[in-house]
Each structure stands twice: as structure tokens, then as C-alpha cells.
Image (cartoon, rainbow, N blue to C red; front, side, top):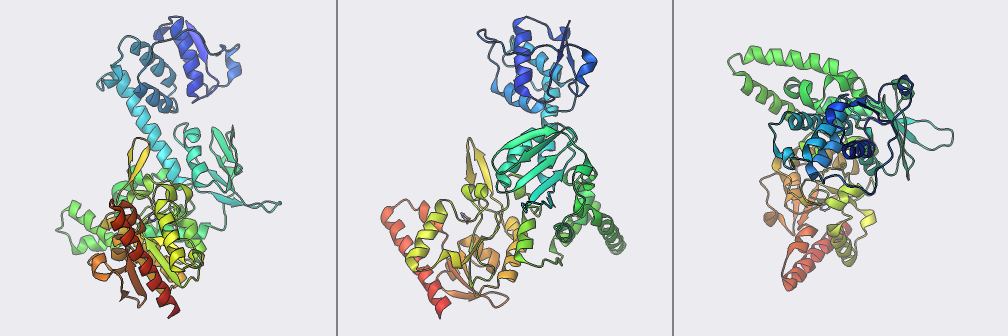
Length: 479
Ligand code: URA
């Protein structure tokens, strides 16, 4: 019998080094005791050495096993190390084992991998940073989160990408992650009390949450997936959930009384629609406040895949606002609008037309990048009408605060968001249209359209037309 005491709960490389040695020593899975690393080490006396075996080889395993094992090892099931070793052992004889979904070991690992991925997703969605006062004047942010599994190390790089410019820490019961703007480090776990209870952003979260609260979703999904009750205690906005539920319940009862004959599924759909259509009263005091919470948007599912919401950029009192479609791949990573290839076309055309981008407010109709993964690439997908409608909430707030004299809509998505889904780009291009609130809109093509024209002469002609449109924008501003 071999006893293995791993040091880490979720270090795949450490487990792999030990597993290879066991395999090379031909130790059968049933002859290994994997001690849960969560147990204190000194209970077990001398530990097994885990140095890497070099020089000799074990059979190559399919990539699927590697991918699943890297996720599966983060599961909180104390049996996970043994399960992985059993699969590794069996794979030496049966290379196709991972394809057999009915196999009990494969099925078990599959379920653990799904649970870990779900948990990582929840962590991305529900971590809330609090601002921490610092004597040095540096603003730091810290968050407390209790994952079900050991996912902090998997998720921390996501927060590095999303909050690169911030100094932050995430504390969980088993480990903490710290980012100082350059280096990501991990330390011991902590306690909820390590994180301050309040900060200045909290009223904003609460106000935003009240505005997006959808009682039907609460009923249908919240308990299961969307916002499980266990996360409420970490969310500042959770304080308002009680009153919202009571309000929703009263509204629902009144509705049931009126519509007793409606079958329940229709009833729920109707409630969802009603909640979506209900005008929201959110009190934001500034554009900066809006920007601080836009990343939390859950109005449509696009947040699930995107790195971050990309808010507009430019002077808060800009006279002209440019509206594109949605952030692209590079914008999603940078957190800024129009910085990728379409942004380069836009910048060049602006300069040629004599417009200064720095004086304009530049934004998009949709704030999250919609794409389909293709290998290492992320292919742009056009947002659908529902996504455009859901995101209008944010565009309207930008319009309310910036109050531009003129809006330049670039492309069909911007036009339909601003002027309504019945308005086509071809019907309004190159002329001024008055929007519902009286703001003037001037419509032109989207810069990425110019990048897609295969014929060079045609592309050049269309580019010149685009520059002409921007000149017209300039003329309207000056006039
Ligand atoms: N396309 C857009 O519509 N917006 C961007 O920010 C980038 C590309």
C-alpha cells in the first residue's frame, strides 16, 4: 500500500508527477491511499517525496483527459486524486476510454469537471470588490468569495485581464490571490472579516440591482443557477432582495387574481416580459457611476463569454457621440471601444475629415463582445434584436449624461438601437434624422464594413464616402 500526501489541493503538476511515478512503479490504483491535502500535514508524519520522474516515459494520454484532469482536480471531492489515477491507469490499456461516456469513472469525472466550470463561472459573475482606504493614497480593492471548489487559481487570471490597472486581492477560505498591477501571487486563505463590509460603491450596486431585478427570473432560475442563495451574503445588493421579493410577490398575487385562467408557463413568460418592459428608475449621479457598474450587467447572456463590458469613452460633455455596434476581440481585452482594426479605420477617417477623436464620445450599442470560439480565434457575431434592446439601457444612460448635440450612428445595429428596429441604415444614411427626444442623428456605415469589401477600388470608394460622411458630421457640429 502506498500513501500519498499531496501538498496542494489542486496543483495538477504536483499530482501528475506523483501519478507518473506510481505508474512507473506499477502501483495499482487500489493500492494507493491519497490523503486529502485539506487535512493538517503533521497528522501523517513523514510525507512522500514528490520529485518528478525523468528519463522514463509513461503512455501518452488523450488531450481530453489532460483538460478534464486539470479542471477535475479543483473539485472538492476528497476522492478526486484517486479517481484521476484510476483513469490514468486504465488509459494505459484503453486509449479510447475517455470517449465512453457510460463508463462510471468517466461519468464521475465529467460531472466534477462541469461542477468546477460552473463554480468558476459563478466566481467570475459574483465577486464584488470593495475599495480599501490606504495611507499611501493608493486605491486598492479586495473581495471575499466562498467557492464550492478550489477554483481561485483557475479564475484569478480572468480578473488580472479584467482589472489589469487595479491593485486587488481576492480572499477565499482556502487561498487568496493578490495582483499588484504586475504580478499575481497566491497566499493563505482568509476570513470574511478580512474584507471591509462597506464601501462607496455599495449604494450604486444596490440601485443598479433594484433596476434589473426580474421577479420572474427569481422564480424560475435564481434559486437554481442565476444567483444561488449562497452568494447573496457576499453581495451588497443582496440587502434589497428581500423587499424586492415581497414587492414582486404582491404584484404576482394581484396578477394571478386577475388572470387566474392563464396556464403557469405562459404566466411566467408574461411576467418575464413585463419585468423586461417595466421602465426602470435608477439613480446614477454621474457617468462615472454608470461606468463603475456596467460590467455587472446581466440583462442578456453576452456577459458570460465576454472578458468585460466595454463602456464608452470620451469627454463627459462631448458635443458629438459616435455609436458603433459592439466591442470586437481587441476591445474586449483592452476594455476600450474602437482600438482594434475597425478603430484604426475610424481613427484614420476621423483625422482625414478633420475631426478630433479626443473631443468625441465614442461608444457602442452593445457593451459586451459577442463571438463564437474557433480554435484560438473568437469570431465576431452580430448581436440580435433582444441583445440590442437589453443594452439600450446603458446607451440611454450615456446619452442622458453626455447630452450630445449630434449622434453619429455607424452601421445598422447603431441605427436600429437609436432609431428603432424598423429603421434601416440605407433609409437614413447620409442625412440627419431626429430621434424621439429631439437629438439629431446622422447615420453612416460601420468602419468594419470597409474592411470586408474584397474589391480594392470599391473599398477605396466606400472609404472616401465614409470620410465624406464624417466631414458632414463636422459641418453639422460647426453649423
Ligand atoms: N466595432 C464596434 O462596433 N465597436 C468597437 O468598439 C470595435 C469594433
